Image (cartoon, rainbow, N blue to C red; front, side, top):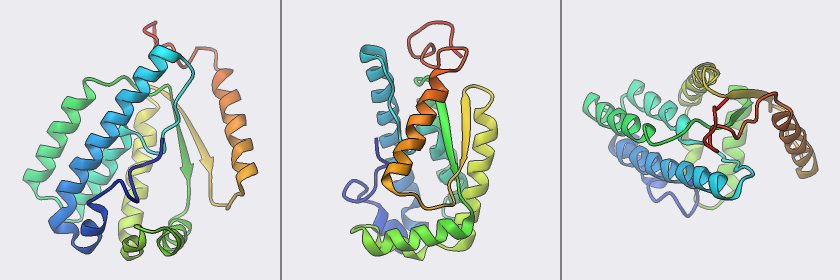
Length: 196
């Protein structure tokens, strides 16, 4: 399930032009979209089994909200309202069976953002992201990785090298095999048994 972006995030361009004005609206929009995606993933696994791979989960959304606050794009009231929604929604979710983090240097992230902005329609506005913003997101994601280890299986992969599609597919096959080989079934939580 891809992250809401080109063609699906009606706030992205406005946010890129004026983050202080549009940060709250965009983050609430993304929080809602990610929450719905997480609920869909849970329902699909419960009814059909298997697994769902999400580009970015509900759990990572708070990383962006924290940066919005720290960079002055959220007021204290905005942040408090966002966190209230995040907390209340989280009560209706089950932890993911596994989380895979693709670790990338800030420099490589900036390079990829610039490339994506130049080749994908609807993402041109992202070329204005600053090094400070990308570094702050990276720190938040590092913190998220550590906290998620308390309640799910966390895998971290070095993703600084660019890969072609067959290489990415091979990594996916290897990750799926690794997750399936865990001593406890990673789907137990969603299937209503004892969990991880």
